[in-house]
Image (cartoon, rainbow, N blue to C red; front, side, top):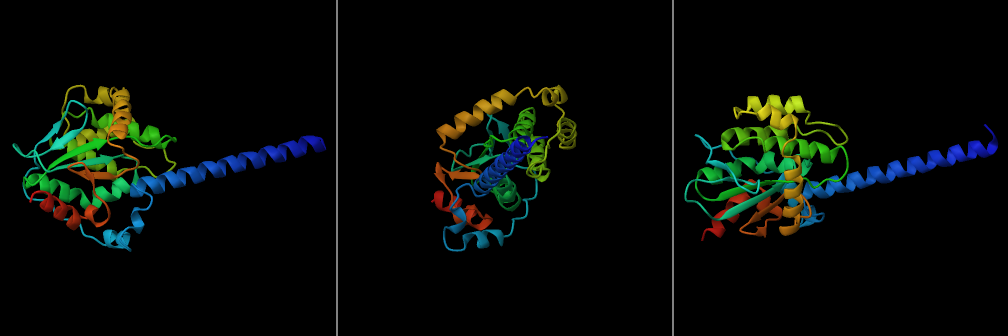
Length: 250
């Protein structure tokens, strides 16, 4: 290879490295943004993030969960009969690390509030990522969950998806795993396996994601709203979430 050829090869390698570095930085920024919902969230309240991270989860209430119903638009409501408000809307992405953390910490509180008849909780699984493999991971998981007709199996699979969240850059939520996790969760719906492996609801999920993010002005996940107002800071902790619901009921 001549000198000109070697110089061109070096330039090409440098260009590729620069492109890779920019792509990695973009992924890092997106994950950071998704993890907190709003970029400045950790700074609100002077040390809120530390307080939030030190909070303790509630113990799940004894007995079955409040009824879980898949709604026509694809969202899922958990509420006792006759409970219509206050409404807690949870916008989440199964590939989002912040959503996983919120679910681990405050997920039991959401279940308890619904079980106690103090709130109606509405889950909105969406896909916020545009990069791969994050986007495809998210879509596979959410589309598989849409194959569950509701009830406690829906929640068990919902929780399992967060527990098995792939690491950044990894391809996860494989079809065989999604089917197995669904069966472990107690899903007995006819055609569940075919629905998952064919990704029957993938396009419906993507359409719902775009529509929901636009209409609800969702810029990051997790986003949690109480009667339409976004909760922030300590309100996302178990104690803060419960207090916000009690205040809304006054």
